[in-house]
Length: 430
Ligand code: EPZ
Image (cartoon, rainbow, N blue to C red):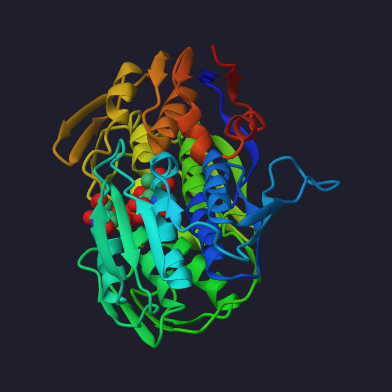
């Protein structure tokens, strides 16, 4: 397996192009199941999860083509995917594929809406928590589907099609909101989704569905109103910039010091994160084509943050913020309210010399003068990049193992950091 070596101590200067959002690209690709026409997705990030989802969708019968590199295209800009689900060849999403990437469970809604049936493996838990799907099932049952759970699979049927209804989520769920929204576009009649997730990626998917002919009101709000239509046509959509990648690199610059332009970033999708970065005394400047982050000389001020659904501080940036706070001038507090086990980066950060005390869903981070490079192990996607951030500001070399976690969510990470002066390289697997 590949490893990454990082020599700490370099400031970051230059420009980082921000890729399309993984957490928009995945549901957008799944939305192609809703139409027999071609859905063109531009600025799709080059990620392992995107390639895996392509295989899963091809198993359902979706034809997928990608554009090669165009003359003058810089290496790190996104890919164009063309997805055509002319017919659905198979309504089963098998365990061996779904267990590798839980977002593939989200095919449930579109398959039910398009074919009136679906057999989708339960995704199972993962490193950060049990990850139940009861809210997905609630939504499908509210739309008239009959659901059975057998031998680790969700068997869903709606032979007469789905029927619009009022869906009230008892808690906010990004995935269940995506599933309900996509299914409702082809249901008979009106659907109201209350307590819907408001993450920008939901809005991006909703805007794409509207381009495909869906009738959706209340986009970017907690209440979505969908009027079902009989079919959806193709569309051409550009994937929204990745706010988690943006926040990650912003925290890397705040950690090492320097001056970096995050090109193509959407600061408007990161207000809470940018407020926290400003509180930590990083210099955050919104520009017309992205975001500029500087920290020269000023120390890192401690913060108190708790993760919340959007527009609160995102759980997907919690590990990265914790890495930044390991060298703050004081004690910080971070509370993780979304997932029950999302502190696995703590013991790895401690190997680099961080001083972090855990108490249930709370972490107390006492800033230290110095971190020291060491071998560390990635445990999940966002935890792995928090180790990169800490290693960039540690003395000496750090070797990060199990970097396949990184490749799931960060397009060309080493190249983007090398181009800004980081001493980072990928060591081919042994
Ligand atoms: C999405 O996961 C993201 N994944 C996650 O990003 C992100 O951390 C999460 O939303 C929260 O923002 C993608 O977009 C592909 P949820 P999802 O349903 O939809 C509980 C990353 O690193 N819940 O909003 O699975 C659940 O256990 C990944 O890119 C139920 O109880 O998250 C959690 O505590 C990690 N029942 C909370 O809700 C359900 O049916 C929020 O989960 C569904 C969820």
